[in-house]
Length: 238
Image (cartoon, rainbow, N blue to C red; front, side, top):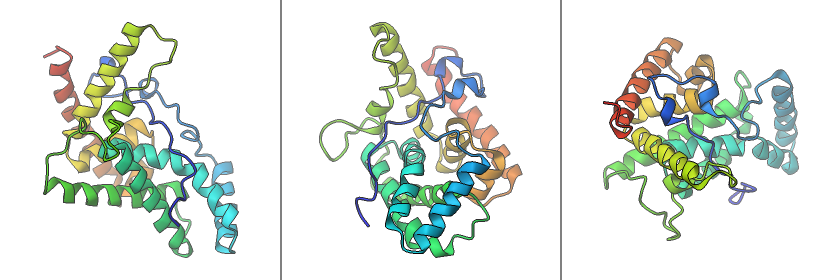
């Protein structure tokens, strides 16, 4: 089932560090990824039809199901692990596991939140193994040797027609946010990405992490404070 991903998307923009005040408004989340706002009943119905067709042996339906959600899952993995290549691997593995276990999906939650749960567990597990061997760095190049790591890719967020100075400023701000997020522990970084980058509801995050909603809110509060504490010195606002 390898090669299941049709393409590798560009990452979703991060919240604007310049507006950092301990919380993020909806406008500051800068959501622009295809399908990121799709959470209505129509999308759920489409997923249900594709899932049933996939269970009946329709490989094309499974491919369509992956296409509908792979960008969001990749974005989540990239924000959590910081490496584009690792994010590709985790995204692929998450979908492979989801499809192999499709008969176990009870459909009490949305399909993408189920895949998110798989992806989160994969990233955290892999990162813990890596942390035992080396210090996590967003500046290290990927194994491809082309320098296309998560940090460098995440800085490519400004429009091509933006003035060079504005583009450079935006790139630096996003690099700072990525670096600050990498310093936050897995538990808090995960909820920060799910809420402030992916804009999931508290209930969806609770479902993904298998924790009470109150725990999600308290983790998010602490995560935002931790991110703010790390960003303020970088922005000269101590």
